[in-house]
Image (cartoon, rainbow, N blue to C red; front, top):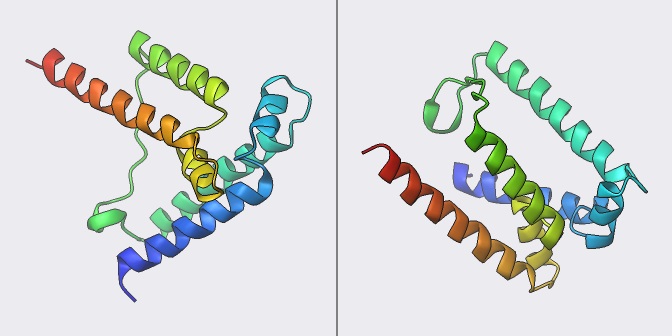
Length: 137
């Protein structure tokens, strides 16, 4: 089985899990942000801890990352741009009821308004790439 097929299968499984835990449900996201129901916050925390432990285990076992690159976790410097990007991400998540992964899960569920979220993600990434290119000149 090819590596890309395995990645696709894991992606489909991930989207299914996002859907099942309610991560693609706007009401569930809203209730998390208003602290009425923290179930989704616990799911996110569990995913973070699982990924952190999993990455360390893979690293200790000598596994490589995508394309054979060593697994490295670099601490990102906190700058005003990091804070601004985080604020934009949070505002967008709150307004759309989706982050990048859940927007794709929403489209898979037939919630086609999530297409606008995905278009916004693409536009924001493009604008950031242009800004980054211009700022490095």
